[in-house]
Image 1 (cartoon, one colour):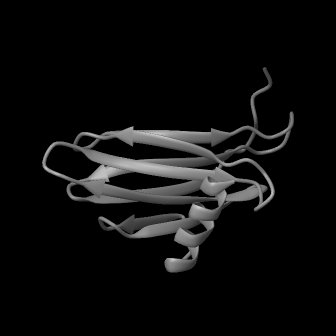
Image 2 (image 1 turned 90 degrees about the vertical axis):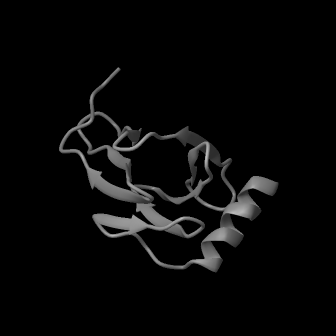
Length: 114
């Protein structure tokens, strides 16, 4: 519950919504709309690591999932939310671009069934 409140508070501090490709600076945050919910993305950049934190939730009553990634220059991390069979999957690609983070959100054309 605390994580959901923290993610919601962070989203209120920076209410912008990421477009198809958005660039984020250190200690900023972006809220990205995903298929049935949203993600809040931010990063910190210290001398020894570039840590990206992404919190994903369907709504304020659902459990939130938090993903953390340490990215080297040029590296990317992908978070994908699969849809029902035949429906598109939501995809979030986080790429370190120097001292900034590029956030790309897209919908894949077809979900893969497991």
